[in-house]
Image (tube, rainbow, N blue to C red; front, top):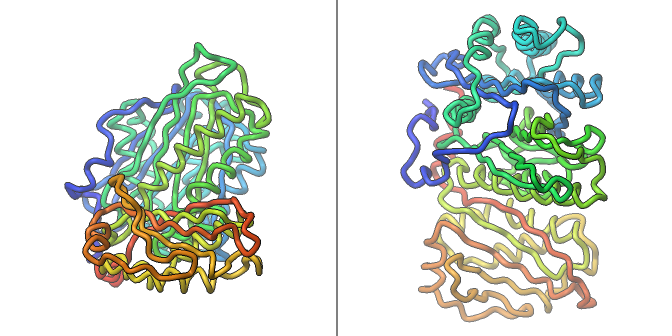
Length: 447
């Protein structure tokens, strides 16, 4: 039986679970047990994040052709509302509601409407307006219908238990987990140049440990802030931040049918609205959001199914940024590289192989006689050079083994500026190793 891995957090992972948090004003969260998956008899599997104030909202979605019902429904809601007036996100784990036909679409819509009904009963919505003001996410096994009656009965209970406390946010982050070994949640505070006296908050949670290789979206992620951000720039903010975070991670090369990252901003903290990315406020907001999204996405890599290592692949001195990212991604996704890392084998030939077969890069990007590869230890010691200007180094195998025994590692690829030697662009990708445990977990995922 594939375990509900989040029920017992490994001691090595407990350091990544915060014991306190600072959450955005006006937002509430909760997680409750429904039993979406029959084998789950006690752990939370329905999460609700809601705002007392209507939000500006944006999301990025999977590019997988087989898009799950909640992806279709949520995209439609955002488009019809032009990114305005969103009040909540409801998420279930245990069933992806993907490839479930018209019935699956109706189930997702009914979840959204059930949350809307809770707001209406509380006097926070004037009526059951269309389109819905609630986004929907689902994660779990593909090809199975939701136990929708159980979920709809539980939604009012979830609404009634909404709270701004850290424990409630933590419950929500637990409820969206599947094979995760720990809930992934972060929060931070920041200020904006035009409103120096206002303290803003940003919170986020994500889930994912396998089927992670995004393309314009990834896994499930929810970001929320009380900063006043115009809906006209929210989508650009999110896409720019995600491109340098969730779009730059890979665990197994598989892109899910349900991948969604949503961003809500309710403006509850006050201050001057951010209406352009060309302003100082806009640039600071982008920097804060990007850094935060990177930290959140890195938790996904650290929790890769069966993973024992957190690996940064950094490509520098490339003639173009897209080529740098493409090469970094190819190395990060290489099964041969990942298995060598798990085996603590300094087999740099696999790294070179991945660089050399990277698709879509310019003809002048990679010059073999200018290419360098090193392992960069994260303890501050000197890099271990493996290849220098196309010439192999005599590798100190003892030191290499010590470096590869560490959990964190950086693989540095220096392209030497390409064939003309003038390239200065760089890009990073984050990945993990590939172990026997990955096969064990995914061999019996449905049971």
